[in-house]
Length: 176
Image (cartoon, rainbow, N blue to C red; front, side, top):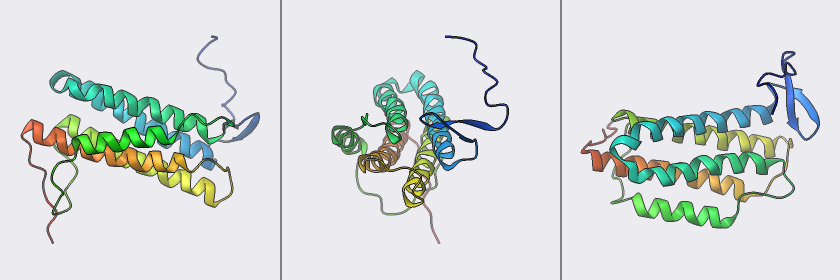
């Protein structure tokens, strides 16, 4: 591998579609950026939770690698995400989600738990960006990618609630 910098993006363009240079503001690059934000926040959550709650690390690593596979699958002819991934995410939700909530909660809590909530919101942004790619006709992709992002945000929410209970933190409820 060569140097980290290539200077090829200094003009505000990058490769988005195979062999096609696009502005860095292109909707596909916005989508990839949203995935990167979510993945980085998951890395932060792993580093914070790893000390006190290492039991979540395997699932969080799966989430991170899944985000990479989703990104690769958007423009790939051979998708890297399947219904098996969606089922695994559903299993993770079922493992962590306890009694159904009776109210909306305010995202927050101790740093690792708050990082899970932020990662969830970044995943939701990536989901919205992916929908825009389809609606605007930028790329066509397998519908399983949207399912995976939707379930991933559910899994992050369930994990955040579980971690809150484990930490003895009572999430604040929204009241009007």
